[in-house]
Image (tube, rainbow, N blue to C red; front, side):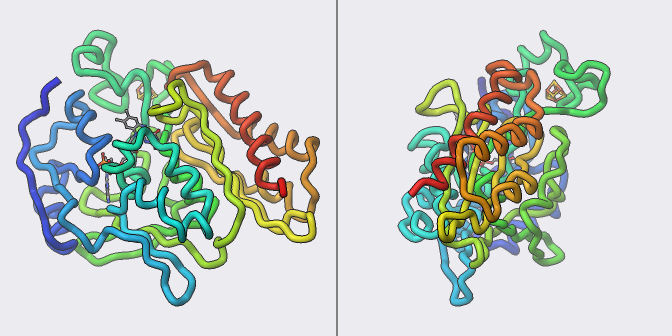
Length: 327
Ligand SMILES: Cc1cc2nc3c(=O)[nH]c(=O)nc-3n(C[C@H](O)[C@H](O)[C@H](O)COP(=O)(O)OP(=O)(O)OC[C@H]3O[C@@H](n4cnc5c(N)ncnc54)[C@H](O)[C@@H]3O)c2cc1C
Ligand code: SF4
């Protein structure tokens, strides 16, 4: 599958990058590591007139603990850099655990945290070649007006399938968004819409430029569990992140988030709250797993059956909670 023709734009500063976005609005795609964008362009899911290559923006690389305890991570920081960061492993282990499971080492060397946050939603009817999609019929997400997964509906249910966003949700991370009008910060929780078609709150003229981990989220015990077909390379088909703080054998705070089973990664507020103030045992971990499974809405967007993926959310949540609470 060949790449469509496009013009490559290579800005050297953030201001130049957002100026390009404003100038080519609607007909430009952002490239960070390119590990998702390039295969999608080969499949003709995107055929932009221009590609904005961010890789010259060196100010957006790096992990920088600030004096106030907040950690700033540039959007172009690779997943390998996150996985290998001793500082993050020590203080934000749920993030290093999740980053280490993305794709394969080669893809983690190229893939960035910004690209992982902005990752397009996935569906068996969408992530296919143009010939395949023409043969089987286009759908709401691209070129059509029906959904093969939920026929009769008007919503796209493509699954958000990134690994680091559930970990970042457990850490109450914020992201910085930069456009030609300046920059602002939002909670990552408010970034995803829950609609598989327009899955993120980002204007075509904006970039995700930085991620911030609050000081109050440091030093939680972190666990990430992921279901995939090939252990060495695949996207998650179900994923669970748990961050837990304990005191005197009881849970002082707990956060649980799931991915790959809904059009957005979800922080399960109630599931975390069920654990607070309690000593974790099999029964409690079971109950939390049941609640997580009830929140998951897997459909036939992905390999493996929805029933199995929902069951694995239950199993992984239970195991992750028990692991986070073990001494
Ligand atoms: C075989 C294979 C297996 C994979 N397995 C996994 C997996 O297990 N888990 C997983 O999470 N991912 C997986 N991926 C997807 C991908 O490698 C990762 O999600 C990676 O983090 C994407 O980052 P990137 O920098 O390469 O993004 P890109 O491909 O450059 O961009 C991805 C999307 O985000 C947009 N974008 C990127 N950066 C920004 C920014 N700063 N601001 C605004 N928009 C931006 C792009 O326009 C594009 O739409 C896999 C990919 C392949 C090919
Ligand atoms: S969920 Fe439906 S609309 Fe969305 S990509 Fe899949 S088939 Fe298309």
